[in-house]
Length: 251
Image (cartoon, rainbow, N blue to C red; front, side, top):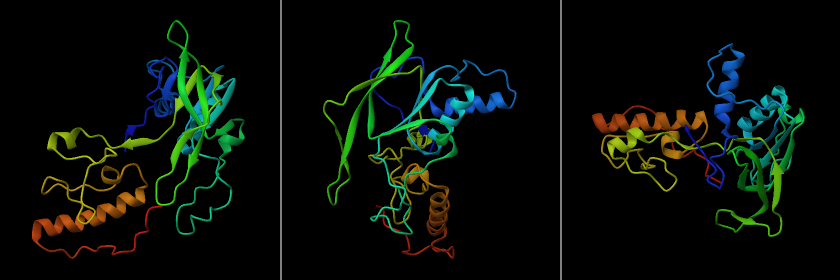
């Protein structure tokens, strides 16, 4: 998955609202001694807010601190997890636990259950702050959790640089559109879970293209499954292995 998740709110076009991967990629080039970097993106002497948790957000925090940022804050829309494995996520499910990296320990302040509503700029189009509100997640058995804003919790924050580390929405769709492949409601390429074939006979998809941003082990697993069904489509049968019914259900 390479299509980055944006934050489509007022002020998103302001100078100083930057995608995390642009920031990190440029820094890696700088470390490698490359001087032709285009417009410089540095956190030096700036109040930095990293929106989004995970490894990418952690990398942004550590890099900003090394640049000499005045302050670094980390916003996460999810509720603060517990250090222990949640009761509803037993092994071997991946537990949503609170994870603290070495970058977090270097000095960033973390805020949970917080949603960014608006970026605030000056008259010259430069970012000077943002507005947030607190949120809570409403859980209903059998349904996906819903997000609710907590009234009266709006707050304005000073910042010169915002780094968007909110993951990816899916893969590039250029080839899929050229081939006339249908997409599902999550913008992934729509394919049968039984044989990985799309709406166009003879075209199969697997991994991030079918399920969205996920782990490399899923790409390997689905690639092997898809290979079996491609073989069947081409030859009528296959000796390539299938993994059977051993997958974990999604939670």
